[in-house]
Image (tube, rainbow, N blue to C red):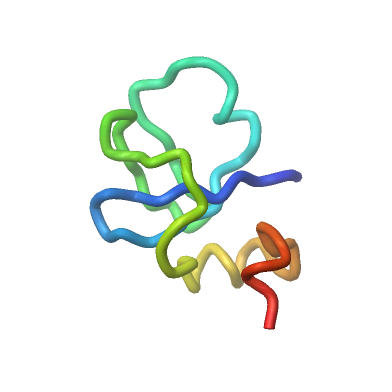
Length: 69
């Protein structure tokens, strides 16, 4: 499943959210690691440190080249 990596304003980490949540308006979003963020507290940007739990669950699907070592 494809993911988008968005930053939570709660912990300032970038979490993996399933792509199906990216379409349309929602009251909250749930990351792969089960971190929940209300719409007004999610930044739809790939910023901040990546969530370790999301990385483990997603595996090797990295968000883009700048995150790779």
